Each structure stands twice: as structure tokens, then as C-alpha cells.
Image (cartoon, rainbow, N blue to C red):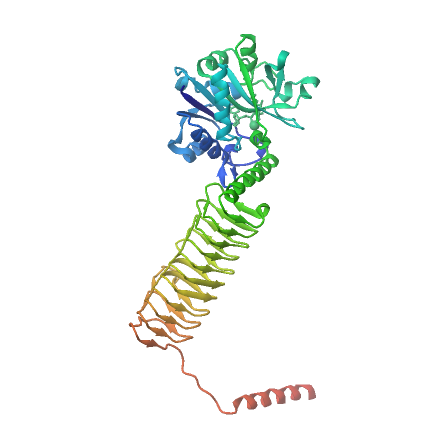
Length: 466
Ligand code: UD1
Ligand code: CA
């Protein structure tokens, strides 16, 4: 049977107190609605319709052609929102999943289990429910004779007895598509909030003696609907625990999962160890046998096997096999390290390509540079890549040696095997194999140190006397 999905994402989310539309708030680095779309896709929904309203362009721009869209110009309630999809899905036959854009933790496997129950029982609706010690804020699932679901009552419409019910509506449902739209046409807004509630469809099905199933999840995280920042922080924690657990089961060692922040979409190879206080973000891919952290902050980067990164920031960069980075290095966008490079403390790299075996061990800035194999860049050496107007390139050939505290004024080239003497300010190209000295010649004045000390002492005494 065909499965379709309607994702409700039109609300503003007033309680978030934010300029950002609610469903675009991130949980583990991915907007909530992105998590929901991933789930819906992996639960094999053939058509996905996202109901947009507040921030429609932003939501659409983020999701792109992953879904079809329908606009709910005015937010008159969840029932009204679903009805907007009638033009697109009304003629379909099959099962329709309705899910909220603010419930990022619902699992695809749960939807699949619900669908089995739904289709085997021939129900008109199957509701995903959960049992909360504190159900405040959620719709309550009211069961009647023989435990049959009768209706869902919103918090604001609850009697005292209904408010005491602990089973809540998670806001995820499966419906018989045709019956869903038939029932929605009968939903009114006569309730405490003056809204068209999707949940009223359940009561209407009950009256029509249609079958209703409840699928109760044990994993309470799945039921979190993010309405405010407290729930957002809670969702973040649950999602982090879930992602970390997947990495642990995949063979990654996390010394302290509670202080390891790995975003959705990150991939890590087996036998890699992640030390505490590390953030691994975006689409970062890490190979096997690496040691990352403590205190590493990696984003959108590719880290090969056997790499060590300590107390460092790496963004939009590529780090080759067996490299060692840090402590306290800053690899800015466009850095590309070959195999077995060594980047030491207080080194900043930007738009710099270093070939295999090259070393920048201490206190350097290498920006807009192309560096060959086995190059040694000494302590404090820098590329002077910017004259206040333009950026220029520095090229250094294989096996070159750049002494400590050298300034390479770009554009400039240092040839293969060349040797630049410490303290040089290089303004002209250095041919391959040459030695460049570009500094003032030293003058030693014999005995002069004692002379200036004596002079200083005499001056001090004169000032005391007067
Ligand atoms: C809803 C349910 C409640 C359930 C809870 C679970 C209803 C009436 N209530 O309540 O039973 O326990 O979710 O989290 O359905 N939206 C629209 N258009 C609208 C209104 C809402 O697209 O006109 C979207 C929102 O963007 C949001 C979702 O629907 O993603 C849920 O709306 P929200 O206002 O958060 O509903 P709750 O009060 O949480
Ligand atoms: Ca909600």
C-alpha cells in the first residue's frame, strides 16, 4: 500500500522567543525539520508534503526538492494545516503519515512498526502515544471500554480527570488517506484555543465506529515536541546520546560520551578515539585509528586514518593520513595536508596546500600557499600574503628549508631544495638549490656592553645628587 507523509511546519513557534522559525532550530547541528524529513524518507514514504507558513521561503530553501510544499497562509490549527494538503493528496489511496516538524526524535523504525499494526488492523487511524510522568502541555489520549481510544483532548480543554491521564499524543499518526480528508471537513474550531485540531479527527472516527489504534513507544525521547528552549535542550541531549551510542556500537571509543558533541551526519571510522570536550560538526568524515581531542573542534572536514588532533580547530579542511595537528593549531578553510605532515602549536593555516611530510612546528602563519613535500617551515616563519589590497600566493618547492622567523613577502617562490636563512625577509624568488640571506649584516662593538652600563650608572647617580 502506498505511504504518503504530511509534515506540519507552518507554526511560528512563539514560545521559542526567536527570530528563527521554530522548525529550523537545530538539534545536533541539523534543523528539526531536516531530522523529520530524513525519518520520513527512511520510512519509505513515496510522497512527502510539507505544510509551510511562517518562514515558508526559509523552510523551502533549506529542504529544497526533498519534498512538495503547500502553503498555510494563516495558522488556524493542526487540522487546518493538514487540510491544506488535500489539493495534492486528496485523490490518493493509501496510508498517510502525519508528523510535526518539531518532533525531531521520532524514529523511522517506530513508524514502520506503527504501519504494520495500522495496515494489519485495517484501522482508520493509528496514533503514536507515550506515557509521561508529567504530561503537562501535551494532548491526552482518552481511552474507554476495553481500553479503546476514544478521543484526544488538548491540555487547555482538559477536565481535571482528563488532565490526570498520563498517556499523551506525540503528534505522529497514520491515517487512511481518504477517511482523513473526509473527517477533516467536519472538524470545527469550537475549543479553548479557537483552532481546528487535527486531534478531533480521532473522536470523529470513534463516533463513526472506525478502528483506532494506539502504538505506545517506550522511548520517551521520541515523544518530545519542541515548543520552547527547555525542550530544545532536552531534545539535543537525547539526540546526542542516540548519535554517540551509534558511534560506540560502530567501534569508536568515546572516553566521555557526555562531553562529546558529534553532530548528525558525521562519519567516524573504527578504533578512532574521541577525547572529551570535542565538537565534530557538519559533514566531517574521520578515518580509522585517529585520536581526536581533547578539545578538538572539527567542522566540514575530511580526516584520514591515523591522524592525531589535539586542542585545535579544523574547518573546511582536509588532513592526510598520519598527520599530527596541535596542540593549539587553527586550520582555516582551504587547508589541505598530505600524508604525515606535522602542524604544531600556535600555527594558523589558511588556503594552504602542504604536500606529504611537511612540517610547520611552531608559531607560524601560512596563508595562500602551496608547499611541496618534506618542507620544513621554522618557528615563527610567516607568509606575508596580504598588502592591504590583494592576497598573493607563496610557493615553496619540495625539500626546501625555511628558517625561523622568515617573512616570505608574496607573491614569491622558493625553489626545490632551497634554503632560506633564519630571520630573512624574502622579497625575491629563491631559485632551486640556492641559499637566500636577506637580513642586515651583524656588527659587534668590542667591549661596548660594559661601556653603556657604566654610562647608565653614572647618569643615575647624578640625578640622586641633585
Ligand atoms: C500538538 C497536538 C497535541 C500533541 C502535541 C505533540 C493538536 C491540536 N495538538 O500540540 O495533542 O500532544 O502536538 O507535540 O494537534 N502547525 C501548523 N499549522 C498550524 C498549527 C500548527 O503547521 O496552524 C504545526 C507547527 O508548526 C508544529 C506542529 O504543527 O510543527 C504542532 O503544532 P503545535 O502548535 O506545536 O501543537 P502542540 O500544541 O504542541
Ligand atoms: Ca508542538
